[in-house]
Amino acid sequence: MRKSDPQGMRVADRPVTENQGTSSFFTVVAEYMGGTYISQVHARDAYDAANRWARSASVRRRFGGRAFELGCPVAIKRAKNVWCVTGLGRATEKLVLLNIVKTSDD
Image 1 (cartoon, one colour):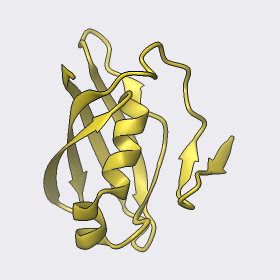
Image 2 (cartoon, helix red, strand yellow):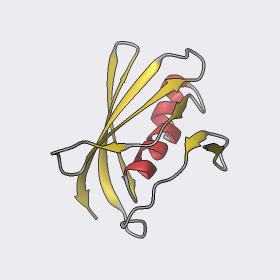
Image 3 (cartoon, helix red, strand yellow):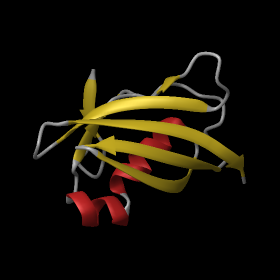
């Protein structure tokens, strides 16, 4: 089931995680329309990192506000603190692939 968050982005239902009260540093590597874009965000978990990336000033400047509709991050098997998530560019309907790596705890 999909729903809208307060900023009007469509997001997947949030998974239950153990680390929802603390902030960690995440590196987000986005592949979109032949380009690779790397950003870092502070977030509670991978889901929060993906959505903070999508709402970040650099993403809004480069791709426009509310540019992406993202799914729910999935943990990569046999890799610690690594997730991936796909989505679509709202204007282009082209695939975006995010790789999310928990870089450190703060």
